[in-house]
Amino acid sequence: MKNQTVEEAEKLAKRILTRKIRKSLGEYYIFWSTFVVVLGIIFFIPFTQSLIPYLYTLLVLVYAGYTEVIFYKAYSKREFLRTPKSKLKYFLFITLILAAVGVWAYLLDTLNDFTFDALSDVIITTIISILLYDVVRDTGRVRYYDYLAIASFVLSNMLGPFNYLFFFIYFFFWVYAGVKSIIESYEGTEDEQ
Image (cartoon, rainbow, N blue to C red; front, side, top):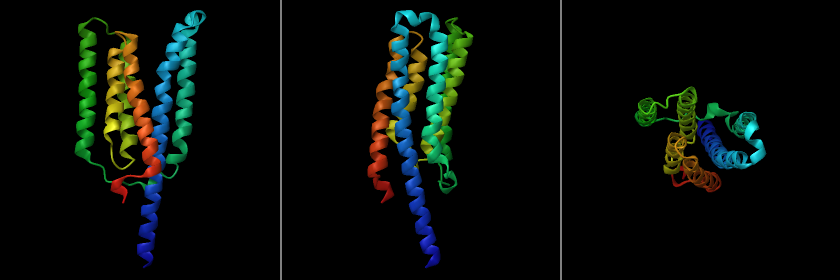
């Protein structure tokens, strides 16, 4: 009887924690979807043109700092998760991300547009995509909108340098994923029942 009670308490704690991570993920999606909008506003204000490198750096620091705040509480008790993770799905998705980034780097090299900025974009996009996928896996099950969010992030960063409007590709998918994540964190899912 005592073991069953402990087991049920662990299941409840895990469900609460995964919902908290899912809610944090939703906040993260929605918060970062505004990044491209704020950046677009900064670029279109005439007197800020000479300040863009400083404003961009400040903006990234603010967004990164708030990201830490979003996930801090959700991950403070992470040891409860210990979820079985599909290594094959993880391997396939990471391979797909790396292949897309490899094609991206090849095309940049072919088009003679392989600069330090382009290389840093490739590296940062790869790191963020892999870390984001790892966080999503901690929610228990990767949802279709998580895949859409990550894929749209990679795609918008690949196409964005050719036309600034392509950076808005991820905006819509991240807002959608954020709303779906927050709704799921409050309502739960069928696989929790």
